[in-house]
Length: 395
Image 1: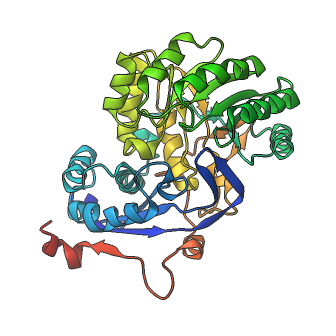
Image 2: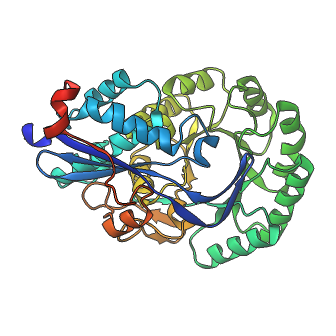
Image 3: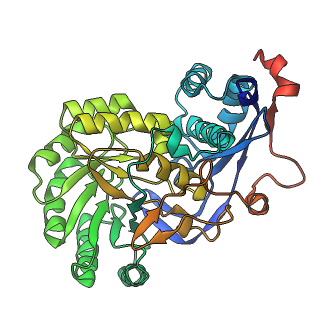
């Protein structure tokens, strides 16, 4: 079995997929998503897929689709080809030695590796992560068109379809007064029929947050995501201690287990937004979640607007987590004009259903993969091949 699980080849490609509407955040708007798709082969012929997506290129953090692709092809793949794919932690350690940081790139490779090994064993990925604790997750939708009437129409349709009854509003791009009016109008329009959250995406300082969050809570908001800059832990701590009626959730402030330890030690948030890409993979997401559980901090299943590959990977790890959770927002595939899998994960009675098939439980449509491949202009995507390149890389 050991020889069969040797990592033989790794490829990476950048896709460009339009969104169904502009998705507006505090730092800009996106009309297309550009995920990096990693494909990994084992010596036994099994293949797995992974994904890393950013929001607005490098606008969310230091990594971009181009930097992720570069890191995978030129650093991470040479470090892993020829290695035992079943030794997940050892593979993570090799990637750390080959390339500092680059959590998104490492996450995409790790997901592809777990997918390939799980398919070899004819097991779902959640089984490799300790077993699932739930079969489905309540699924949120983000209202981010920037227009009240359009947002309310979106929310009404999803309520009628029994797809979503948790709605996040993206704010921070306009004045705080305009944001408050926007949130209040949507809250009045929904008339208590849904759970409401807001995401400020670091746009405010502490004083602005202290002034404008209380009236949003009065309007009906129950969860506030990253109201201040990621480094402004004192302001997060102050809001966590003083804001009544809603919970403060850290996102950009909690990427590594070390971030999680600091926030827990300083009691600077009541909820962690977990995102597989920012944590560096499924295993490290579990590390951050374990710190949250030990510190009596809840968790929320976040998204980077991935296709069904990355969304399924996130669903697998979220389904294994204990502790207090506040739903998930793995709606990325629905925001895209099309997907790259044969069938998306089902949504029933407002909850995303966990796939139980081998690996990630979703099957990639190779034609769709080629359709959106940025580099398919007469040349193949770059890859690292064990037979040809391993000796030169010293693997």
